[in-house]
Image 1 (cartoon, one colour):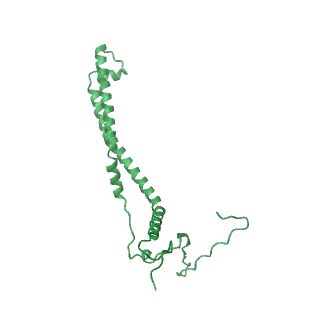
Image 2 (cartoon, rainbow, N blue to C red):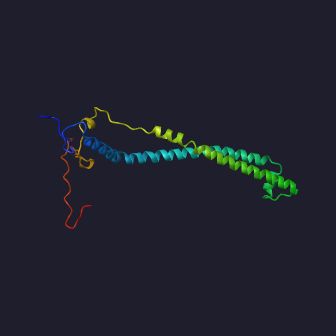
Length: 191
């Protein structure tokens, strides 16, 4: 008599060619992974993105703060710039001197803006490296193969169904499980 069981799906004789059980296992694995991992992956993804954004912005702000200081120093070094600021852009200068100063200020502003744009681009292109770094910090821990939860799984018992025992006051022993509450009165519906 044959001791190998028939296919649990199609009831065909136990043959290696029957793909039913293998296909169903693949489907079950995908479904179990989705149930077990989707929330965790979402949480990990949000954590990584938040830290990566913060790092990119911090790096960008550091670089731009140095650029702003250099820009202000350059403007302060321009001839008549203090006078230009003192008179809110209308200093008592010869029109040629004023035009030359305005041209220098305008060119400095354009250079500053191009530098800020380049700093931002340089920061953003670092996203892959920064994301990889933060993802590398995530740890996934598997239980030990000799753990009681692995050797003696509590299959079919949901977390809410586990018995909870309470200590008896003053006795030191365990009290019997608490009886469930009586069902609600008439007209009450369960959701």
